Each structure stands twice: as structure tokens, then as C-alpha cells.
Image: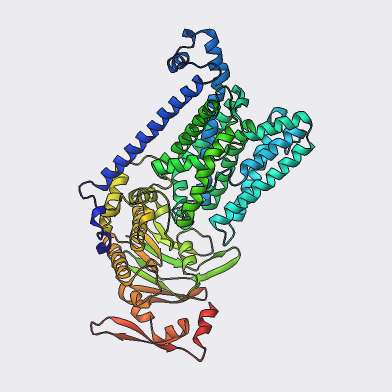
Length: 360
Length: 265
């Protein structure tokens, strides 16, 4: 056997021990995470600076550090109007990206994400039922009916995908096609809701399906943040198990991972992560696909780093998209869902083609 | 020193038992036990049952010297399928195997074990490579490394040579026997090639029709009569000029056309 492993001497790194290499690798990954945090902070500041009234970055930073040092008008615009929107971009991006990352992990499918598999569409349909007709799928306090409906529909869909993906002979492509079917199904149902909705409800539903951060408020931000802060630590606790899932079910099982249980737990948590943002800001597509892939390229799939990197990459993409949605046509804020889709679709297509060549 | 004995062991999926009533004498440290039998005889199921991954009747009697081993990972199962497309380096994947179920922090103790494992298998040159980019033989070695890094005392290897060419089959099996001897492990290894069993194993368990057909020292158990009843072949066991016993197949037994054997599986 040693004959084989030395067949490619150029791959050998004789001077460094495995331990040293590993420590260096971990250090590099921490640096990348720090870099992502910095990039996110920068994007956040730019996002805050842009709008009908433009401020300099210095003014934004000053208003953040010492709110009393800037004029009242600037303070109100930054803290009351722009801040919830800018922060919403960050948490929604993080939530959707982590949701996509873990769906890809447990389904062993690079094309899985809440958006491509119809979970976002299902959540959208559930939310629309509440918006248009006040239908509550399960009884909830009136202000939570919309997110609750979104969550229930998202979870039912995720569960359906889970059950079907467990069937024998189901390939990566089958699941993607199933997802497309689900997207069409829920879009059709959504159209039905729109058809029967009143004029005012229709406007609300249509605007909402475009996905726009301008609906963000402080309470919505806090709820989304709370969901993210509850769910991500639960994933962190399972970091080794989730990473092992990517070595294949049999291998993970042999390591002592309870495969069926972790699949189900992850699915419930992913539904929560995918549904709440959809309920608050509408359908924002492709973040759950693009975010994890960028994280994977930068940092690999050790979940101790992959998980925060996915969250940061998703947050960064949506924050940059928010900047782009303001700058494309000055004076107009595009619905951000349009921006992310225009960026995400070419990415999705390239993934399909690379997936045809390789198993992942 | 470790010793393991199976007592009336059974397992299956759902209510349907795949294997049942399997009892063996105690196997001790340094011993290699070949587990052979026709396809779908229940070898993998038995392994999963021994490793505690499946529930079922009977018991696995494991005696481990109290030296701080976590009993949960004293027995480790190494599955047949080890292909993965995960973006992980070989070294990371071995750390991952060791750290399962414990804290997120990777300490120097863990890395020392991983380094020692890498060295024992001679895979230093590929530790930085991505596990998705390995050849079949390298993947098998990495899989063994992952299992060893969990420091098991009993190792269950499910057809580790099935995807390998002859050179690498011999390499892996020599390694398995060396590891059993050096580390005082008990290694069960599912094999199809009976000549490999004759050459590398101390004992053999023959699984057929969901039960233990025979069990004992390899040379005593593998006889023409057994091969006829289990595999339906006419064969001789003959010693070569080096004194090593070999199975020589003369013909399939009976009048059945060969194709019916393939179809009956």
C-alpha cells in the first residue's frame, strides 16, 4: 500500500507534520471568518449611507458610535428608518444561507435550498392565506398568524421532500425536479389566492411575493434575530455529526451519528429558518443556494467553520444586494428579491452543469 | 486485554430477522476473524448488530481491561461504502472521526492520536488532499485511519477489499493483520475471497441462510464439504509449494446451469 500513496511525490509535504498543517489550516479559516465579518460591517455601513439622502461613511460610523454627535435628522434616518432594513438584510441573509447549507448537508444535494425546493414558495402560500383571508393553519395569536402559517407550510413541504428523498432510486436530479414541481404548485395556489383576494389584500400579497426589505421593522428584526440566535447554536452543537453526514450515511452511522434523528431535527430547524424571513420580507431567492457554496469554496465543510461562514456569506450577499437595489436606478429601491434572483439564476445554472460532470 | 464473544445474537430490519442464533467462542486480542458467506447472507447486518447500530436478541459479551477506554467506542464498524464528495482534507476527516460526540475543541491529545494513526498507515503524503480527490485504494486507507483514530479494540471491517486491485487487497489485508497483532485488537473482516481468509485470518465464521454455518480455525473449517454445502461448488483445498493452503475450484456442484446461480441471488 505505501507504494500507492507515494506515487505522487509532488503532493507530499515532508517538512510539516500533519498536526502543524492542521493548526495552520484552522488559523487560516479563522482569518477568513474574520475577513467575512469585516466585509459585512463595511457593506452594512455602505447600505446605511445610501438612500434618498446620501451620507458619508464617516458620518455613518460616527452616528453608529456616538449617535448624539450627529444632527437629529441624520440620527433618525439612520437609526429609525435605515437600520432595521439594513440589519434585516443581514439576519435574513444569514438565516436563508444556513437553511440552504444544512439542507444541502442532510439531503447530500448541492442544489438543495429553501428556494429551489419550493419551501420558500410553500411558506409564501401559507403567509398569503393569512394575508388575504385571515386563515390560520393552526391557532395562533393574531400578530403571529402570518409567520405561523409560513412555518407550517414550510415544514410540511420540507417533510414531504424528506420522505421522498428517502425512497430508493431517488437521485439528486429527481429531488431538484420535485422541487421545481413544488415551486410551480405553490405559485399556482398563490395565484389562486390572489384571484380571490380583495383589491387591498391583492396589493399586499403581490408586493410581498417580490421580496422586499422595506417592510422591515424593529420588532420583525428582533423576531428573526431571535430565531437565528436560537437555531444556529443548535446546529453548532451538532457540528461534528452534521459534518459526518457529508461522508455518507453509512459512515456517519458508524461514527455513532443518529442519522434519522439528525435529519428530522435539521429539517424542522431549517423550516423555521426559511419560513420566518419569508413571512416578514417575502420571497428572497437563491441566497440559500449561493451563500453556502461560497462558504464551501472559501472554508470547506468542517461545520465548525462552514456554519458561521455560510451565515456570514449569506448576510454579506443580501447586504450587498440591498446596496445594489438602491444604486441600480438612483432614487428607486428595487425589491431585493429581484436582485438576488438575477444574480442567483446564472449561479444555479452553472451548478447544474458542474453537477452533471461530478457527483457534487 | 480484550475479548469478545457472541451469544445467541440476532438482528434484522423491521420485524424480519436477517440473522439469528449466532454464538461463537471468545476471540482474543490480536486475532483476525474472517466472516465469509454468500451474498446477502447477513454479514453486514451481523456487523451492525455487533457494533450496536442495530438492535436484536442475544448479547455481545465484551471484556475490556479497565484502562480508560470509553466503552461506547470500544467496538467500531467500518462500512463498505466510503465515497464522499465533502470538501474536507484527509486530516480533517480523521479528526472528525475521532471527535464525534465530544467537544468542538480539538486538543493536542486528539491531534497526537491522529498523527500516530496517519504514520501507522503511511499516509502522511496525502493528509492535505481533499477526500473527494482520492483513488480507491487511498480512500480505503483513509477509511481505516478514520476508524482507527476512534481507538477501537474491536474492529468490524465490511468488505474492505471489494473495490481494490490485487496489489492493494494484499496491502490492506497485511495491514489489518499487523494492526491486530501490534495493537492487540480483535478484527472481524468480511471477505469474499476464501484464499484471503486462508492466508490472513486466524478464524473464520461462515454465515449462510441467516445463521452461523460453521466457526473455527480457518484451515479446519474451510473444507470441500463446506464449500459444497454453502457455495454449491466442487473445490479442493491444496497446499502450494510454499505450504500455504489454497482453494481450487473445479466446478459448480449439481446439474444446475450456471446462470441460475446468478438469478437466484
